[in-house]
Image 1 (tube, one colour):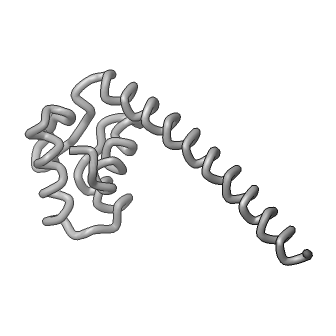
Image 2 (cartoon, rainbow, N blue to C red; image 1 turned 180 degrees about the vertical axis):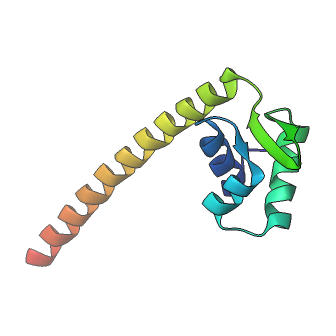
Length: 101
């Protein structure tokens, strides 16, 4: 369910608070039908909820646990990327040292 970048981005936007679909469309710059499909996946999984306000549909996170999950995932990915950057720097230094010899 969280394997699609649009769904992750939607959840990140909803961490700021409930958003009408038109705001999500503007932020994501995508076709309404594509966003609708991704929102349906999130809604069916119970991660987001929707409510009508007149003709406007507003989405929000289903609970605080979702925001906690996103924060934990972001922390883990940040640590992984930092480790990969360190390894890349070491490899580049080794490559430069090999060229000098």
